Image 1 (cartoon, rainbow, N blue to C red):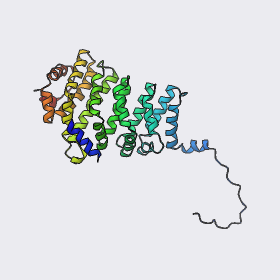
Image 2: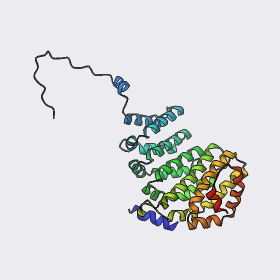
Image 3: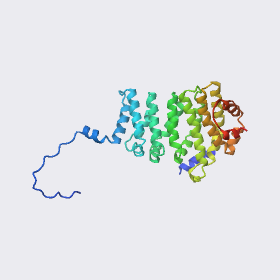
Image 4: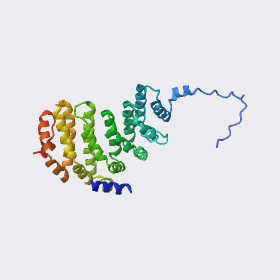
Length: 312
């Protein structure tokens, strides 16, 4: 973990022509069109719609259902890269991030969903999000929010920010993001509810993705943390976390479909981590994991030959 933190620290240090004469009678000046008519014909500019969405959500007199619709509309607007970039010049990032603390669960969840969509594969939006410490705010929600659905949206936001974004990953590591993720995974229940299942699935998928990106030989070494990241994942005890998640789900007799969805992502994570020496050692030394995998395997309809090799 110290080596990964050192990598993160080093990487971050890192006029009009005259009109022709005419003898025609002068015309009356044209009547101005009603702005409402223009909007109906051409549509309002995206920047106006985006600002109105945030204003509606911030308005305490707006019904919760209308706030949810406004955030859904905003999320669709920021799917456009240019609209997402314009969140910054419109001054909407700090207002959006402030909604992470809103008293309504629907608003918190929607604001995080908008943020995650805006920063996904969008370097300029990622930079603006970083400047407003959005990732740190999302991490706090991931750990502290009482609603599982909101924490899942926070994880989506963090994942969108760090995947394929070396600066975002650097910031994530420096903010002790891995430890925050681990705590969030361990403190969530295992009752098989959609929110819990989604949070666990997305957590293990994120870990797998970060490990694979860190080890991708086609990416220049200066743009990835290399072995530092999987070594830190192993050192922090995520293998034990995987074992604990499986055990809780088995003991709670979760629905087989929910168990299979989480198990599939755990398998992908273990295979990726097991391709490293430190990861393989951590897997070999975790007997509770072997026991949980052995018990879960017959209950899920999955073909996982690579995982089977780890426990053969």
